[in-house]
View 1 (cartoon, rainbow, N blue to C red):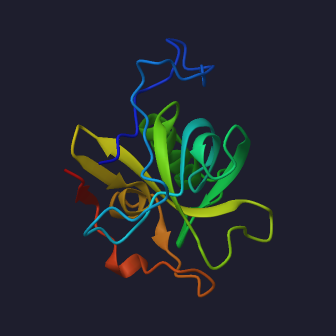
View 2 (tube, rainbow, N blue to C red):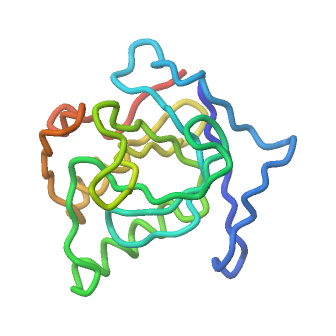
Length: 167
């Protein structure tokens, strides 16, 4: 079972303590696919910044590039530019959902990085003890993003589910 963890947001929502204490529950299944699920978590990290509706920065706490902070581009979706009202709404919604949260990344195995050096991944957020939400799919379902099925990755956004049972 994978437990992604708890929220790390200050009351002012301006800074994040990215140090995990011994009581925090953050585990990673050695980058293995959870039995019966169509994804694997190669990185666990804390969201430290939301750039726009489809790009975030995380500090990796387990797996891929552990200890480093780096940008992540959400795979196979596109949001409007943050300079537009729709883009600002997408950024705000994503910020409310995952800023300071511990998330899991299913990183593109065919090409880890895009042309701007961002890690390309599907982002997962644990909801409760036994459910993981596909944040890419959440953005699409809530009309903040459109599917943009790039052909240089392993993902099929048309097969995504919003929620997965990990119990």
